[in-house]
Structure formats: structure tokens, C-alpha cells
Image: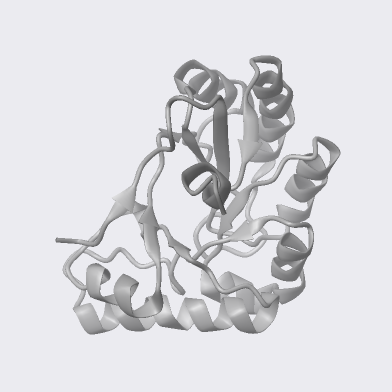
Length: 207
């Protein structure tokens, strides 16, 4: 009814996808440095408005080889919004991401994880597949230790892990807890034998 969405990848492979919502922000570059040091691909779901504000950082994400999805333009809470509004917001994000990064998203994550009437039609029109998450880090209000403990305790084969490299549309958000959590989480996942993949690699392993 609200558009198809996927929540996890195959359980038979020891692989997970690390995803980041709400960026880019002034702190995204620190996350890129950590991912690069561990040769870990990730999928970023930026807000179109943040891409327009920080196009160079959005480009850096794509140029580093990470995947870019669509998280809407204005990070709206879509419940009780019209189908026209929802579709227009998604399309605006799609356009600005393509314009500034050269990447055309194929994955859509609804802001706040709230799906609503009109998304199914917009996803079909824009060629987007919905994707949610298996484990949420709650990194906007937890300390790094708690974020890592939460995610490490819930990770499993095929899990889609959700963190945030921005805080909705705020400028210069404090994402220090997220940065430190990523720094600790990546070696932990590797020690447990997990392969880090993009959402496309996890959900469509033949592509």
C-alpha cells in the first residue's frame, strides 16, 4: 500500500550494510575517512536540501565509491501529507542528488521511516526501491559506547545498520557520537567475520 520496502539482506551470507541518513553534514568527511581507512563501503541516504547546501561533501561521498540513496528533499514527516507533496519532495531530492553528485539513486528511505499513501506511486515513477533497516543505532541521543553496544548486540547476517551523518536539516550538527561509534564498530564487525557491503551489494549480490 505504501510502497515496497526491504528490511534486510539474505541470512545465508555473513555480510551487512552500513547506512547513514540525514547528511551530508560538516562531519561527514570524518566518517568518510574512517570508512576509507577500513576499506568499508557504505550507503548514504542524504536529504536533498543538505546536498544543495554542501554539494562538495555530497560529491566526496560518491567519489569515494559509496552508494547514494534518496531520503527526500526536506526530511518531511510524510503522514497526512498529500501524494503530490510526497512525490514532489522525492523527485526534488532525486534531481539535486543527480545534479551535484552524478549519481542517480535507486534506493529510497522514508524520512523517520514513515511510509504513507503516495510513496508507492512516486517510487515507481522515479525508479526507486524502498529500504528500511534491521538495526537502528539511535545515534542522535546515545553515547558512542551505547550505540556500539546496541548495534553489536543486534547485528546478524544480512542486517542493514542505520546511523546518521547529519541531524535532519541542521547546520553544523554534533555527530561526534556517531563518528566515534563508527570508529569502534567497523573493526568489531570485521573481527566477527562480517563483510561490509553497500545496500545494492547486499540485496542484489549479482549486480
